[in-house]
Image (cartoon, rainbow, N blue to C red; front, side, top):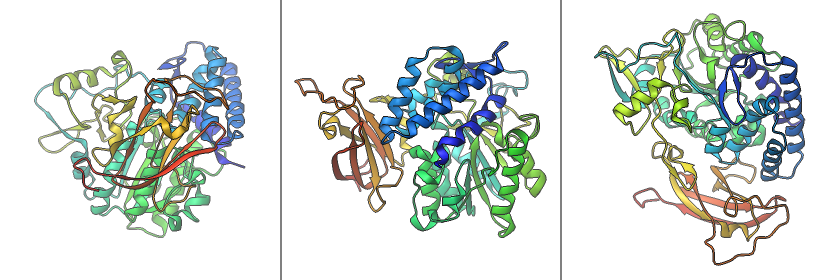
Length: 458
């Protein structure tokens, strides 16, 4: 059975308990008297729709099935659950802004927030990458968290893998990797495929795994193999980490990527403790915990945490930043739960895609044309590294539609004097195979390209 069909139920069970409920295509708000039975019915319907989508030929047809299902049911209980399912597909096809808006978590000020780092003269801003690398010195483990529907929160992790490897970190773990591939063919193959994991279907998550392999990290899976949820799942994940990472390699140094509060170091989580709390209890290792999901930009500034609005207005950062005091102690929005908070800058949008897809300059935009689609829209354009198979998760993907309209299966849009639609892929310098597929998953055009660095060098 394809694990991508059954895994979301586990993820949603954890998500429903850990997060407030999302409003239909918008920010998450706390439910008042929401019926648990309605939520369960919505989860079952969402699971059924996703299973139906998985039987469609190719990712584009699957994504369009999910999108059509969302449009067909305007009921609030369904949409607040299905939002997250659809947002995953949106990340997989490269619609990062759509995914962010589809499943958006508003961050209001809270009673347990630390004072703003702008208050007084205590803290100074610096590039988050520099602060994290300095804080990671001498540590056995660094835990990054992410918002699964907002790949912005994966970018800094990808960027830092090389520097952390040079610092002596040698093992990489990520949530929902499948041990059947990670413990088997992945290392020899050298790149992720659909059987590598659930979130690895998204190109930036796949790039984390690919980069780790190329840099010489030992990649391990730690996902719970049982159907446990809540505290039991958290404890099982921690036990899996201890066994997979440290049992045979007691001197290992671990970089880990997980969702949301799985990495919190104190407080109640899902009726018990978070994975990071169980990890510290089992191993005796205190991980450096990097919080990346709370101080992010939203489609509506009113949904930003007020500290983020103030920081961005005052400092106008061009890259992710963190705060430390004169002694090097980091600032954290939730000082008991996480060691350091990352503040992300505003997004710059080009042809519908955010500039953070450059990964801090590791990648550059490469323009592709709807001409690749042979006038059959929408089509899915993918770029794969030269030397990787057609089964590889691509370096980047984008859906090209005719002026944003959703063509029906088999429909051919007649070219006119109007401009052919354009889109940007974000790619590292190098050689790639670029391929377009239509709604029926049929290949349209395929080309080999060379992507040059921003200065023009390959």
